[in-house]
Every structure is written in structure tokens, then in C-alpha cells.
Length: 138
Image (cartoon, rainbow, N blue to C red; front, side, top):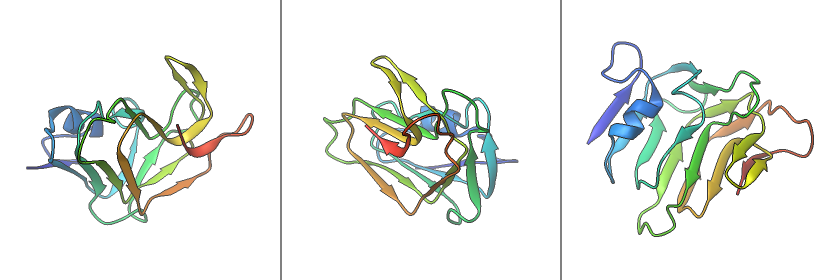
């Protein structure tokens, strides 16, 4: 099933569409800039889903707004999934350090822990870096 996100759609926040998605569903995010609660620190929650932009990273932005403790996506505890979670076609920008149950992680784009994930055709840029920080980390 496809779940669409954007102005005028059933879902206006990416997290709400991810929460409603079942394994093998696709969340399609319309062109635009998405920021704030529900559009950053997007938790996939162990699902085998695809979260993708409608028209590629040049047209769809996840803006973490240089806020502390923010990144684009958080994928934790999905290592048992046969099929991966796919994150495709976003520009993830202005992220910072993420606080996890294991302590702070220096990641501003995508944080993965024990997950089966494919990160495809994304741009991760302008990461807030108080110390060595990565766009993708585990």
C-alpha cells in the first residue's frame, strides 16, 4: 500500500505515515521541506518499509534546523527482518548529535542500530558538528 505525505494529503507528517505503514508498504513524501516534530528523528520502529521522496533529493528536504538531538531517521532493532527498510531520495540537512539509550551518537543524518537498511540516493549535508560527527552512523 502507498501512504502519501504532504500538504493536502491524509498524512502531513512523515512519522504519522510511518506509524500507519505495515511491512512492505511505501511511504511517499511529496516535494517540499519537512521540519519539526514528526518530520525529524523519524523512527522506523523495526518495519520493512520503503520511505521515499516523490521526485528525488533535489526536491524533498528533511530539515533538522540545527537543533540539538536531531537527525533525519532512526532505525533500531530490525535485524531480524528478511526485507530491509529503504530510505530513498531525500536531502537530510542541518542535523546534530542524537541521544540514544546507549548515550550520545555523533550522527546528523541517519542513525542505525541492529537494522537491515538500504540508504539510496540521499544527500546528507550541513551537519552541525561540535566534534567528529557523521552523516550515517551506527
